[in-house]
Image (cartoon, rainbow, N blue to C red):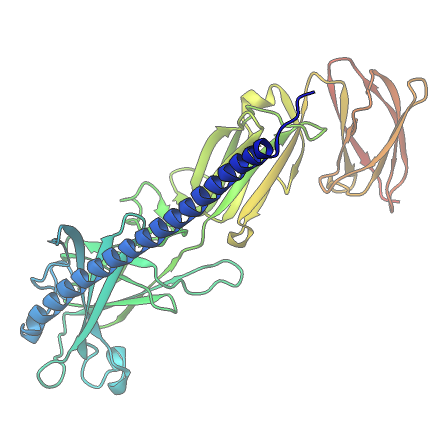
Length: 463
């Protein structure tokens, strides 16, 4: 037996401790390095952001100073509600950074001397200039904004040819209200106006000035906001191929012109196609129509509503199909003929016709299907008086020879499906019993054939 000396043992232990110490030092060094790099990176980013912001402020201050040196009548933009020579939008390079400059000149109707056409003298009391300088930081768009007011030399001037267009943007969903910060762009090449502004906290924005004059249904509005519907007005029929809901705005001088626009937050729809055991069925063709109503097709009788979602589609390999960021509203689901050749609809939850709300976020529509070549029974129970479906009717299917005895209640559409489990459902003659409160009992028989989904309808009489 070989014995190790004390020094040998101590040496081995010492080498082990040296390795642990080296790893500890390396870990601490790595931690300090990563922390320093993170702090350094954040610091550099803050310095760059501050530099960009200072550059934007310098540009905004320079532009405002130029405008301050103009006469009151010259404070107006090219294509704006107040027509003039100041560019509405321009790109400027400062310190190798590209900035976008947007200049908005708008009249302010001060309530001190009355508003609108009830103003003591005129509704265009003074001008407000909003100068926005924006830039991209690689992830988001940053901006600085300067606002300055300019008063006329004396009382406001009465400009008989100027008009007012007030746009109200709101949601028609339950509990809906005005939509703030929606971008409202207005365009009319005939009058030379091509400008935009944003709605206030109540969802309203007002355009006033010489660019707004007598034009009936010729001002195109485009309303946009992240996560919301994009609404674009259209010319009236027959200039448009159908009668649109959102028609171009009109401006009649000497009156307050109001345009109301519905803009809702977008939501999602998830279609699921499953078999009677809730297992996914892939590649099922279907048709989905609905959402925001765009207008009415007047060229056919009866007239047909036109919606912004009208699409043939199919579920994917997992039996699902997502429709992301779609308009809320009523929808209709149906199978395409190619799918109807193979499947029968057992049920659709919440229904073939359903309503999507913004607040839902994602609405799941589950479509249960049965193969037409599967031995099964799809029973529909109706009221003999009015042919309406009976919910809650107890349908019992019995075959003592096969050992089958099952009772299921009908759904809201009066339908019930056998089998409802993985228990084998064999062909044969079954006794059928239907019981419903307030109705006479119904007893009959039904034959289930091999490789065939049996469709059966029973009408029962009120007792």
